[in-house]
Length: 432
Image (cartoon, rainbow, N blue to C red; front, side, top):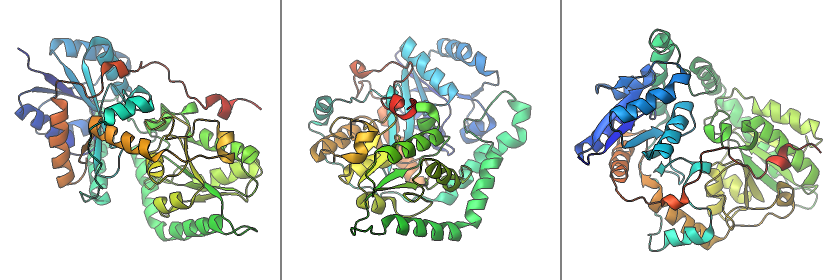
């Protein structure tokens, strides 16, 4: 029998993973599921599945035995950063099991990512301009997004449906389970409530900070760099950035700016749209700017139009945010301090951060066009995790990709899952 057996692990907080399993099953494959917490089972219901309630140290052996006992050929999971998924990806690569990693799309909006092996530093997507152009040959132009409606309320309700059972009853069912988030869900919700209560004040303060940053200097110019902040608990920060700590990266960036940026330039940090407010970015960045002697040149805004700020900036400093791709598409210089799939010669600045402040260089528009076409043809499909239309399209498109027999990204592009080297780690964190 050549039937493929798909093992589904944790998915997004929505019905997406269950509907995807049903679509794969209808196309002739076998489906299994391992839940790690009550939230997983809530979104898998009414389907039956297996449940792991053991200790983290037992997960590897349990999973290897499960794969062997059930003839698993494919593993499907959301992201490869959280411990159970990183372990699953390692096992898959070691034992020849196909690993499919789902995430929000690299291209935004209305796209989902489906990658073999892993993302960012573990992605098979090539970093060579020549290889990217070869992948792009014959692929269609990317059409604009805006296909599906999104609702933050729906997202929030799904998130509650996932976490509330874990908080109320998890201690009875899976006492060894640890949430993949950096803080307890109740603490995170408290931050969101406070942000909702202070939305008008935050908007006023954001406008004030942006206006101050963009105010003309003595020569009538407003030369500034934009640093779009990511979520501190995101695995793109925790495992795919030098130091694994966004606050440390912010502090090191301000230190570099103070030493090397042109005297009249400014640095604007923009808070992520769904940041929970617990990081107190304004206070922390303000303290760092004072410590490095640039308090009058560093600004923080919790609001404003990201695209407008990109267009008006001299360049973008990012860790590995998809905002970097937006900026490249708008022709702006970008430097990526962490592992980013778009950190390619010709797209991002390849020199030091110190040099970037002085001589930011714009990306190659033709290479970016090839990059987006190659990316869409190999790792992206239309759809979303929230919203009925987005989920319906995403489920069908991802199911088709899962059942393909030929790899869209050849094994020759596979990268080891060992320790990641970060190009800017020494520059950012070495003494002196």
